[in-house]
Length: 209
Image 1: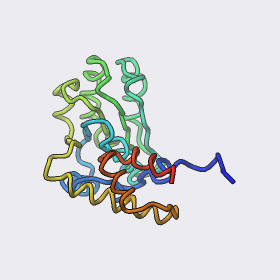
Image 2: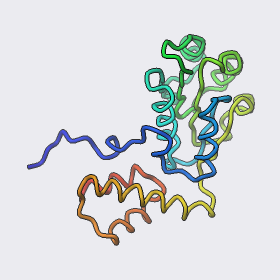
Image 3: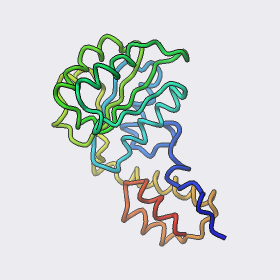
Image 4: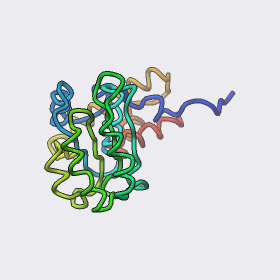
């Protein structure tokens, strides 16, 4: 019998903490250190499917499970929204005893005025909240934003690909065992080699086994 209300693998195995993210050590080590004090806001940039948003959400769930907000900055992208909503959220003290985390997803779609409006709040309220900007196009974000953040390039360099591919394969094998999937090593290798480094696309492929 087929059950159409089963949770998709992409949602069932979405990372809930940094250690569950498939990342190169270059990124994971720096973020582990950042977690201790959260001294800066963060920028995650790189191509689609490299894990920027998943990593941002995992950090938010781990550090501020009761007090994080995700903003679709490709939709809510003007200075009125920044001034009337985001800045107000930034200045409010969290009721849960930790820094609030605000994820501005696809923030390269923010207008220049909206980005300019964030400069002062990023400085004034950094003790109350951490902003995580995620975006694809680094050249569409103004320098004053970058200067107030710790930047992470999620695009893999050639020396990291084997390392991350091994981590991705290990993660998929764990999911296959839990889901009792009947899949051969050859089939798994084909999925990894064709969809790497996009975990979401790999999990979509596993659905049919």
